[in-house]
Length: 548
Image 1 (cartoon, rainbow, N blue to C red):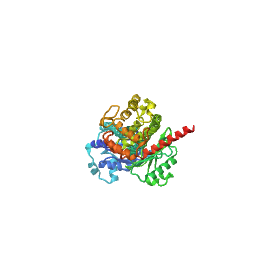
Image 2 (cartoon, rainbow, N blue to C red):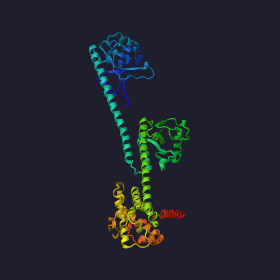
Image 3 (cartoon, rainbow, N blue to C red):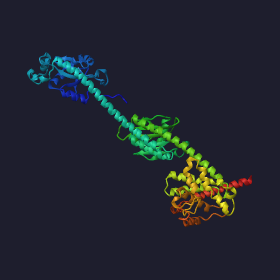
């Protein structure tokens, strides 16, 4: 914190001097005495007298060196310089002011200076003396003691006011720190890898604009940021926007170009100096904070004008800079998470493709089941995270077929009872494969229960209704739909309308009736596009093998 500046005369000190019926003033080096409280009539006459000012100017150095000690200016008129922790200066040392208390002694009444003052003011001496409160006149001993007490009182008063000011400054600092910590807590609470980065950045921009108190704020990611994928070039804004998003994005791009490779916050007061047309009409002051990753800027936060019309402070810049660092960390984590997810899903796709390849008729089956399972989950109103986990569960729902003989999987025509019993083992085999992978435990219900039926006549456990886990009910419906909609060794694909009729007929027996109702309202265009893609890939692979 900056050192606390306490006024030379505080309200507390003036109140105490008034209670003691002691006047005070600020003395300049030219002898001018500026009252800081009401003066008695005789004191006003004395301080205004040219001769008195001349004497004060001559004694100024002595006054500056004798804090807490009475200095006799005229007979019966004493100045007690009060200790001061600072001197108030304007342009030169000659304008230094010294705080003094004014004490009047009994010898003022008979002094030649009193007669001279009355003559200059053309006042009757007797009338002037009647204006003096004789009970307020002090003896030399009383003046010395009172001067010492005044020095101590001034020191105590200044120290007390300094501590009060420090306490107020600390309170303000704590309030500002609380706002910063509160914002950081909000943002860190939202820094979850399952939250979309664009949602996080939008919330961060809004929260920062509210805490800093700017009229508007923009968070912009630079174009051509390959590692940031869909975030590249995006603009987020909050507050009272002065123009459209497209215009703000253009301003942001120009700021990135104008300010080059800045890595620290800057406050711009003269916006006309920037070569950005129209910017000076949108803001008077602009705070610009770079977003930096590994020392390289990849975007900007910029906001304009405080709502309370105060100047954008270094505290505002520091807060924005802290947030920028937090966002950079979040984006780095999001990119790492995206890379891990891509690698994870790529591995699963490769695994499921190898399983599906065991049977040429089910080529792409797992990917299509995963797609339709996710679409059904979304249409049923499930949250994004659950929908994605259902998608992954759909990808691996047939992983247990690894343990089924290929001769059984690829057998043309109907299966024998024994062969079908082998097929019926694949849900439990799949569940056992996944049970040792902690990160995939929530996927197991889709793998284990996707062949259970709503009426309890399914396998492997014969459970019914809502006892079948949601993942199993969703994937089971998508699995049956794909089986009916594609060619198999024992029959050709059914017509789409026949498939829909069969799902409606089996709602409440084989399928969850509520999910079946939602399923029939889905858009099946993506499914049939994927069927064509898989069929084309399969035919191309067969042609390649024939050529070899």
